[in-house]
Length: 191
Image 1: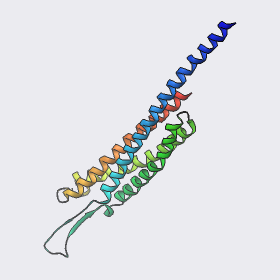
Image 2: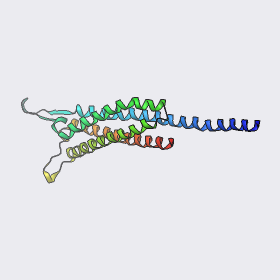
Image 3: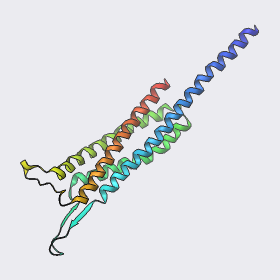
Image 4: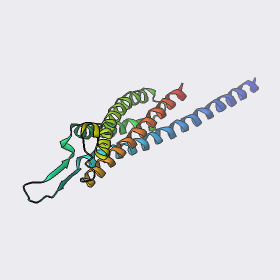
């Protein structure tokens, strides 16, 4: 009889060790999720700030006749700015949920909610980045078939800023894709 009591204690200790180890693994994933969210937040807000401050005026012969390029001249860039602002706002609001996942590493419901909302934010960020990339390509290369001239020869600073904004948005898109995969992996490992 003492042997069964001793072996049941050993079994309890043996079964508790993997749980604790599994909880540490999930906690590490949750911390990495938080860090990735901060990185995506920085990239999204940096892209929005770069786009929002992109304007350039070319001096001409007189003060009254000048050429200007600004993000608000193109609806695609306006959409980009609003979309990246929304994505950045969502990422700020998702940080407390990510902290809850660190504290309670077994919280599957919160991770599932984050996957759904991350997918919506990823879709918005991808559409904004893709649309802005097309306009930036036209600004750099032009289109001879439609008589659209490349403007980056004249508006170099403007093109540099909007190109940087597009690159930042694609960094945010990549980090958000990785966030979704990470959350899906964490949910899969919990079952």
